[in-house]
Length: 622
Image (cartoon, rainbow, N blue to C red):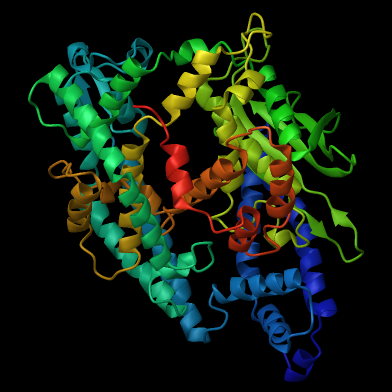
């Protein structure tokens, strides 16, 4: 491109057309790719997955378009006067290209591609090694005492009648949580901790080296710096301080919790030392003794229709949103479509599709997809956001909607937080709108909404006995659920922090011996509990390998912000519509247009505080 034509770049001939293209493309792409998750036809699901692969390839090629990068960069350098949101959008475009190496020489760009390919290859190898590990352990019924009969019923048996336990996480979790036999728990935890030992540790070490190389080519000192640079936390230093502060404030409470568990083990198993493999089992035992909660019984109070109408009511009361069902073209007769209107003005804010029931071939998890993002078109028209919530609720045999487990109720609230976030966002650019915001922020609205699953006021709104829905959960059950939520959460969080610190350290430092690192960190974070001999979580720790590498902290970061918002604005009045509308207008509407740190500080009147999180999350009577 000639230098002359680079002088002629303007907002109208460079930025606006790109923004318009992104706004138009996004819903077209989404309508192609969401079919692989929901279509009842296998050929459509296959075609959709293939379309996604080709679209990804196309976008990958676009992200390396030097001609496009040069005109955007020329515009950014010229500094034509634009509003703050447009400036932020231009910075994002430049950054997207430069994180792909477009500001490097051709040879360095080639090297970047080579390293990227190696990183992908090593990541796949790590996961493949875990998938290939098909070890089976045989246990007699007496060695599995305590496991639920329905779990045992589903297990395969060997020729001599013993039960087969694999090292898949659902088998391991069941044994560690329910099995009364300490030696069985110890054996399964030990074997799980040794999976792919040497092999995956060397894969992880190579992977981390390649990641550091990749980041350094792009001008960062380490991979963690490259990852965190575009997130709310901004720097690895900030992440370390954040994790250390939380860990330190948990120590006293976690010590109390651990002592209670040790005492109970002594009562039940004598003088055997307490190990990390005992944690889940004894937490469950104390919960059974301390809380009169039968979750099988509680399930009777959560018919899907009652939970859903309760969620609509809470979201309406809090955020001033009215959900109205309409008829529309859908891919299955179970799918429902809603318009979302502003309660006061009846202005149309967006659309929401609910595809709630499990069926053959459908995506197996609960999630929200953005089908169309908020955007302002060149003509000045608003593009309306559209959200799709996919869930796996079960239907009764007669086809009527079934009952939800309490964990599924929490999950539905969480996903509705994403729906509200998608619908309420008012960004002018699809690239930074709705769920395309800062990854440290994206979980905050959903984690905030989860709080309403534990308050008596809202629990009564979303519950009703399935044979007589006018009878909600009783007060004592509501109070027990609230207290149960925070039981032993200090110890559980310490375990999470251990993983986050490991992740940060390996991605911030060169040539770390990952085996020694975990041995050192484990007793330090887990109050002296040693890591089981010969085990190393680094060999079966996919979150440091794919998807969350150098960003494992992000979930806790979002939880801290969400807990602070709840504690300071809603704790004393969970139906505080003034705070809800403010959250909608000051936070949900504007995030993407502005720095999320500024958005939250503006809403709270200060920076988010760890203290509020600690008090909110751990405020319980032991």
